[in-house]
Image (tube, rainbow, N blue to C red):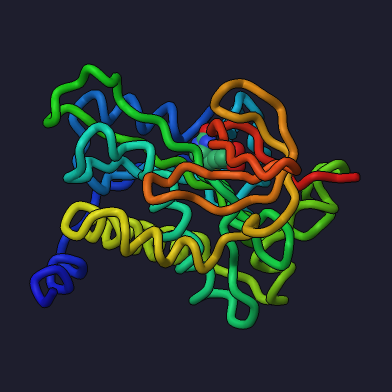
Length: 261
Ligand code: BTN
């Protein structure tokens, strides 16, 4: 523990900063393929082709959001890699709770961070080729956080469903201070993942579950569209829902949304 605290303040993790880039995830994958170390990162003030999950775009507002990608090489097996997104979401949420005092952030399975019922941050995890040997294996954790945006900075169609740290607190935040805090928290949580397994992290994740008990629409692992009540992630991090007939389904890691009538 003391050793970890010591390294936390002495290791300088390499960071590449860009005024503008297509996508920090694309750049991070390039440097990870070239051997970048665990904790190395790419940060940009603006992205011209920021990517979200499921092929969606991630909208950037010059200098007002955090757009970063952190390369991680955690000490976990290949089968555990899909859980990294949940660990990353938890890490971001814990940091936001320290920065924005008051209401607590929540996690919407698998990759969204919510605040006050609106999306405030998202995670896009991209991994090295599955065939990569353990030494070559990595995940790039792309993190987008709405930091100093005002409501009018977002596209009209998003203004009802997204928020920013500034909107919620009335304060301005230093984007780089936030980035450094998120990287340290993420590396700490991944250390716990490697040392103690997923369970302690999952227990904390479950306390922040935004969907739990809510009616949602989703696609099951068998490819069926269903509506049901979210039961939260199981011990493997897979979301389960109960349909109106009481049947339990495992949800595909696809688009999960609250059901509207
Ligand atoms: C989502 O909510 O769908 C995930 C959004 C992830 C956006 C971040 S911004 C930094 C990094 N680079 C990208 O191109 N995407 C991620």
